[in-house]
Image 1 (tube, rainbow, N blue to C red):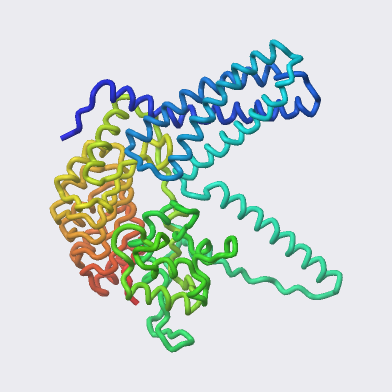
Image 2: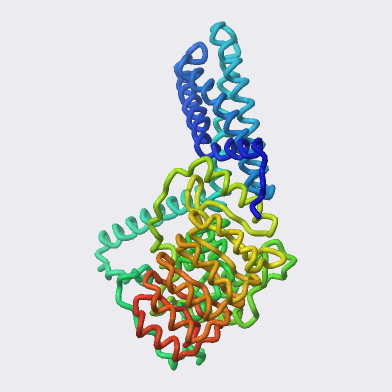
Length: 493
């Protein structure tokens, strides 16, 4: 049953949806006003300029609207009060109050240009502009992950310094007459094979590493582990904490003196260190749900010891590099009200419904962390959002193999996760008729070769995860013959 909401709640929800549309105005106007007044101070102008004062007045008015809409937006999206949200909320409110005080006091100062308060007014304006910028940074971190701006900044600085060092080294070699040997590219961006490229052959199972152990296959053995345990926060384009694990190059590159994966050195690899921490440790990964199994941890360790090579497999970077082009549109007030109402209703079951990005008309629903796990009846309640959902995560839920008749109503879906559920051949047969579905996760499910064969009919399919399911190597072989264009990850050597 859809949650009934009062007309007042509906209007407050609408006010909350205005937050992404208005939040940039006070930030931009406040910073521009501060820059103008800083220049005025250099020129020793007597008081606030008319331009700066006008900008502050507009910024103050819009900042009040922004702070109000942001409060209701967080409440109706049922966001937990994280440190980022707490700071974003209260620094934003403080900035709105300061802007209003600056607007009023600036008008008084401008009417009395000989007052000695102009310098103090400018100092407060500069501090307020800094607070506005920091508030925007916190907002970006909540939407795109911690370090969204700062990581890109430090990466740019690091790359600039590296380029300068390389240029200096090459210039020195030229002066000394040392011949330069062409560098062989070691980055594996080429492993992020495009969907139109011919499939690469799988490595021979008999290949042994230098230590005498069978070579760990990155695409077949490591990617399924990352997909099942890490991609919720660090994959599919997400980078919580500034960490990406859906890009081989990102994982195996040093950043700020640390490595997510340091080839050949397990002790220096943050990925391995964090998944081995006890659950009581704040840095333990994954933070919620089941821990990575000892066997999988050992496999990741062996892969790193062997050099953390991408081999000939498809890099998980293909998951984020080949992003869909999703149509966007403006949602009507009725649609927004319906989405907000259903978001509140599903939150009671532990299901998160949120847009893919701020202001997007495309949504994802995540039931993987629901406690207790949801079943078919709760999935049916999401059907009212079928026009908006493009990602549906039912991992770890208590759904049955009968849920396929419900899922087929989500005709806009591009990605669905069914891993660690009772889903099997009946669901696969239903999914085979969906028009836009590109990625399916059947890891640790009841899928057999029969269901795998039915998925060969799904023309839009690009990636299929079947690791630890009930399929066989022969079934995987037949699927690859029928659909060489699909990246099949089965964990088999």
